[in-house]
Length: 113
Length: 154
Image (cartoon, rainbow over all chains, first blue to last red; front, side):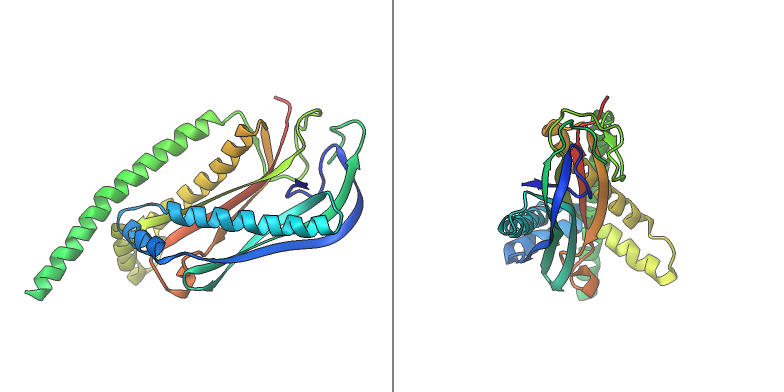
């Protein structure tokens, strides 16, 4: 599955558009992470546990989006966007969406754009 | 007596925040600078037209990088004071800037690791993981950078 956040894929031609596909996940951080975060708020610096949480959530959302695209018999997702919303304190939704398409080789690569 | 104890507590936290916070910030800025210099050869744009595209490379792919950075106690305290008079919050400005540079760097590093030489259509979004916007928890900045890595001619 080819996934890009551009509307086209260089070297490949879009032959069919299957429509919008999306994936989301709502994740909460657990108490241990919360306590570690409140310490970090004294000394500053990266909250690695939160970064990991976000990375996991993003991977899951993208995976669900790709699953939908596969069901539509697409082989690529273009123009992927991410969006987040704070559902409640300590939990966040990560939402990934894009357009599922069928692409095929253009022959000579590099002619896209 | 209680008041004195509280004063010492706050003073101690401010001191720890100042020492640890400024060290963390200085180290981070130094790390950003050297990592950015190492990847200066990559072509980075927010264009969707794949400038400089070279054929024969790998299929372009989406790359995402994220980071969450917390402020320190001193900055939170000073910001509280600054909020009385309003104006630009310079201590938070550097926080946001560091988060943005870090998230973008993670995208570039991953693209470089996978053998790409350019990243186009860069998008930078901020998120609210801790529920900060609802007034819960201390300030932290969450940045999500995404882009499409491709192969460009040198």
